[in-house]
Length: 351
Image 1: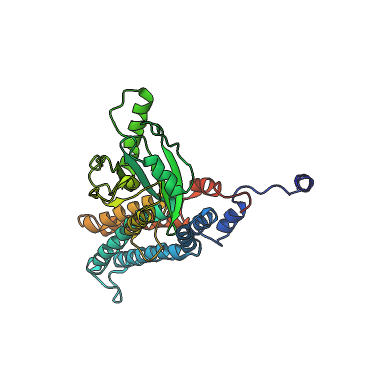
Image 2: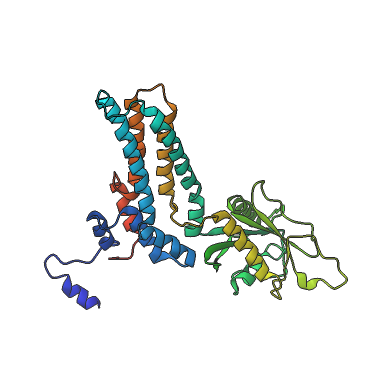
């Protein structure tokens, strides 16, 4: 194969394709817009069913249709305003545009805000749901990670403080990508490496979508506290050590990583949290930070046009034009040249 490629490269106007070149040509010739291109890239990288479905929604143009419909509303509003400015003396041009346009723009602004609220759901589907396993030393964190993964991801010993760094594995649960992070046992550590591990563990907890706070049955009340507002499931581990005469600990779920007891139920709880966070039936939702930034700009510009009634209609119409441009940048219709190299570099050669 290498020899064939070397021979082909000797022909005039013949060279190796660059990453994403065929997709970029499709974009430049109007076959696909930027959102559809990003959807194709996500489809090629999809590992789970929900990632595939989200990518298909984008690559098939459903999300682009939504953005273009919003731009159409802004264009219509601007046309009405400019018609009043330029042809107010004509009989077929309605007067008092503000009574008709600004109430529609308030409803439109709410529609944009609703879409922006769905961004986090799109990011979770595309990038994964982050679950941090936290607890005191020897609470069974590494054993739980191994039980969830079905393989030895972490070293497990009877000695406290074995885990120093963050260990990670990704699982497909109900079609969603779920990232589990095993962390160092949280305690007042004197040894510098373990102290750094505790610091990193606390940082991971702050960034988590869900925290599994672990405590073993021999210390059933020694759960790690998590920041207010963070979703948490209290998990009592080492259920295989309980006897029939022992009282059942008060906890959200009781598990045994050694026997597998409660692991399936724990996965179901995690899936329920994911579905609650996603909470959408349509997958025509934004899933990239770039989309969110442009949506925020559009919302801000529409808000200025609505609220600044002290300004002339010309200035308020200009704010609507800026909002339209922000939406146009999402699909690639306006000023996206700086983004193209980054986006297409994520593709395989030629795709």
